[in-house]
Length: 428
Image (cartoon, rainbow, N blue to C red; front, top):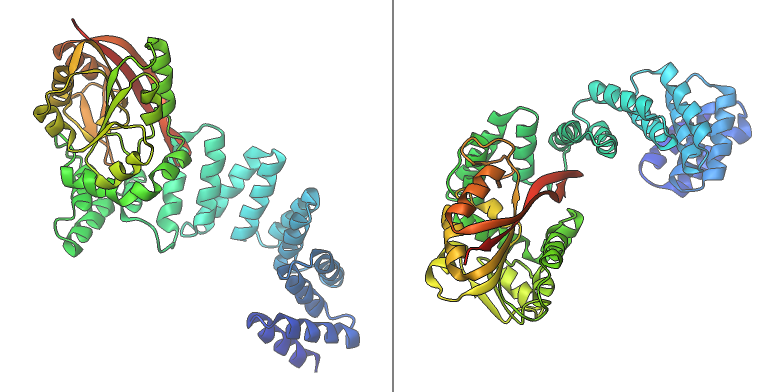
């Protein structure tokens, strides 16, 4: 009789018919007080329903009758954790692991509590052990990545995060993120195959073509116009929120440099190259009564127009604008835009031609440590430039370097992206 009731209660439980299941679970101990199983699963059901104090009472009663099940101690720990009884939850998880050392989720749950309580070393050990037990489950990889980021161990964190991304079955996983993750863990061939398959499905797709070049280690002189326009049109609506999440530092760096240069307010004619949604517009407008914004993406320009900071907005590829225009400016900014160009010589030459003598050029790059070739296309699809290369081209284009400094220009997977802020004055 008790077994039949238990089977029926568990079927109802699994079907989500909680009220009916609870009623049956409660009937069993009334007639069979030593039924540890009924008490435990009643407690487990109550925990799922958020009735934690009642859940704890029944789970602890079940453990007094039978403490031989690892899973029951794990469930005990879950309830204790949700009630904020951290030390007792840790003890419950430890007991569970003694009975079943290979319990993946017990290791990650215990690791999270130990990390919270300050035992970072043991937490890391448990995350690593869990990731070995089931490399195809993302939880341990993500938990370890977060712990490593908090310690500033960014390379290790990126590797763990990539393993988690590869293992994660989420349906909205982007092909670009997955390809980058493959490269991060040394599986570049899989990244290349992923892009090749994408191109087979969508021949000529500019994003897939660009990322395929990046994954192969090729370095065209610049991103294609189709790639940049497609990428920014796609993200225009969410662009500002994405950059906020990435802790984008462009506006802050520009503001600090303009303060250092100590321009007279409302005295300049300025140009914002790659203006995007206009994040830098208000900063530039404080010193420039005349402000022009240029971007290849119409969706970005539409957003920039809503800021009401720009006197003129021009849809154009940057080099085309610099070749066709005749205007002269006192200040030109190009923040987080040169990452889409490898060869900077035509850009710097064009900017020099559009600056008045003594005019200022302020921009950022992603940093390349070595000077082999001066630039490279990274697996993110963005270009990095060496300081020597940038300084050399600025000099050739008629600039005197006013400032060059390292700066974290944004974050990716919690890791600061190393960049540089430059400020250069055109020779008179």
